[in-house]
Amino acid sequence: MLGASFDEAGANKKFADEQGFTYPLLCDTDKKLGLAYKACDSTSDGWPRRVTYVIGPDGKIEQAIHTQDPAAQAAELLSRA
Image 1 (cartoon, rainbow, N blue to C red):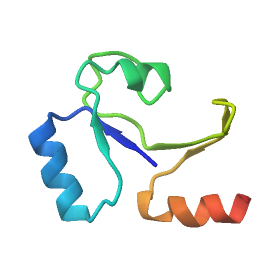
Image 2 (image 1 turned 180 degrees about the vertical axis):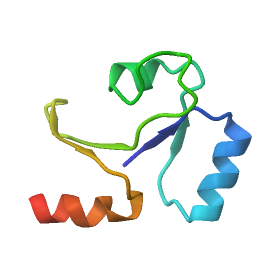
Image 3 (image 1 turned 90 degrees about the vertical axis):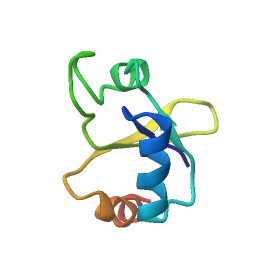
Image 4 (image 1 turned 45 degrees about the horizontal axis):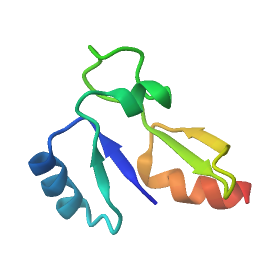
């Protein structure tokens, strides 16, 4: 599992520590990852949309979940399994 944010490393670390993340939170400051995965529309976007991707062993996206409630993403993934 990985997360990504448009923030710099220090802000990401603080946020991840506060939220108790047990997985890496990547820095996508140039927004290339956000653009590639359609989490933003342009490099001028201030923040990414909340999207969870399930990527299969073959490297292909199996599921894309858009949500307004990040805490519900895990339950939503399990309900689709």
